[in-house]
Image (tube, rainbow, N blue to C red; front, side, top):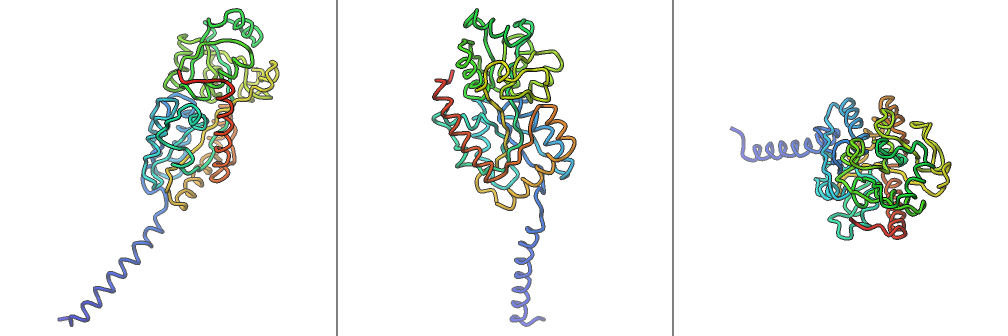
Length: 328
């Protein structure tokens, strides 16, 4: 029989060995060790989905783990933002938000989350110009000039759908009205996907949409693009004039998409996420999809992305104030 003192010494040694093995095992377990969920705060079929789903497919291909898209639409993307802010900070719950979430603090005074306080910025995923699109059966104008004349002849007759009150679609419309001195009725939806489907079906007249969700339908002839925001034409729609070309040099609206994790996510896990997403976005497959959607692949991550978001919150607060936009 073992001496009691020897036995206690062996037990202590075994316990110490287990204690040493646990952090070693943790250090060796690379993220992701299981499927990852990404909250997309809009219904399926919108601009966010146009980038989130190809990204999820490529992520699964390169890591062997699923990136599950969880669409949670409502209130201009803020319902999904609230849900994402309550995810466990372990790297297995992510949030793919958009420019709308930089606008929300100016439009929703009682948000249940704070984008800068409750999340850590990971990286900017895509940057896409907005495009003015119409249903060709409801608006017969084939040029921007003819379209503008139509709006000015009949103030209030036409309407535009948006992804919801306070989204970039909504404010793009308000800016357009301000700069062109026209009046168009705003119809908010629970996401760009439902609004776009109603535009295609002929239930609304027009949209100020991100090129990522509209490009395929423009190329398929289901809707017509009359102008792309900004100073230059977009390679995805080379025949569509820019805002500067049609006499609106200050009409610059882009829809950007970014990735966040809940506050408290370990720094090393944040680094793994950024590395894997960048790796996916550097593939030929995703580069082709981004280009087809008229999107740039930005190079902003973590602190730089956080600074960009802070500046966007400030910028859109000024736009909201100047336009007098209100929740419908």
